[in-house]
Image 1 (cartoon, rainbow, N blue to C red):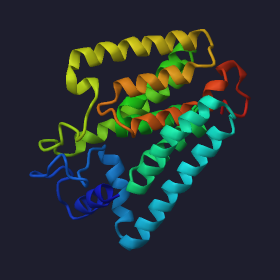
Image 2 (image 1 turned 180 degrees about the horizontal axis):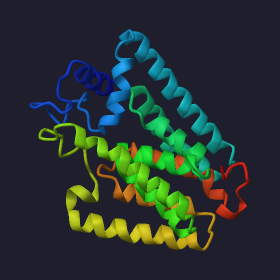
Image 3 (image 1 turned 90 degrees about the vertical axis):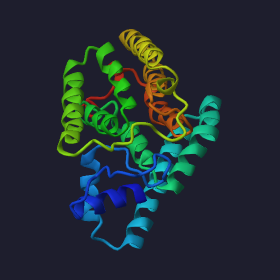
Length: 251
């Protein structure tokens, strides 16, 4: 949480969002889009300890709800997923990373007509790789959702243009992704998985979102235990085909 808090404090004090001389390995280094830091400017006026407790509580509650939703599927595969990704999600919550809230947002809205694209845009603007989930909308030919997600992502990413990016952290600590090994291979594999997710969605497979989530893992600039939690966001939605979504969920 300190990375977000300190970013808000820097903006509040008129300092650079991405200052010079900050190590990429520092736990408080800020890697996200400026709009998220802007949200922390008013939050930084509150007592630090109160924010820390409230933020931690929100992350734990979000993690608990995500795990509960996956347990409701009552399958051995889901149990295995929870033992791995669920444990990771709780560990992430204890560290203050925003990931549990992102997972909850995606889980709750992916099949919603307007909220789904908005959620993907928010997550993509923060951690880039969730943009791969749009492949599902493309495969289903839900062009209104594709357009909305693309426009909102572009709008949120455009906030980078408002700050000095000279000292933006170019690499991520602990990165094990294809992006670090070879940029060309990373791009190629990401395209292949995107096409695979598109093809599966086009056939209305119940595994559509799971394939797209694999694409998120492949396309992630940093592949680690955090990225595995995206599977928890899509598992409950993967049992529902786009044609079977209720009218209420389409809103």
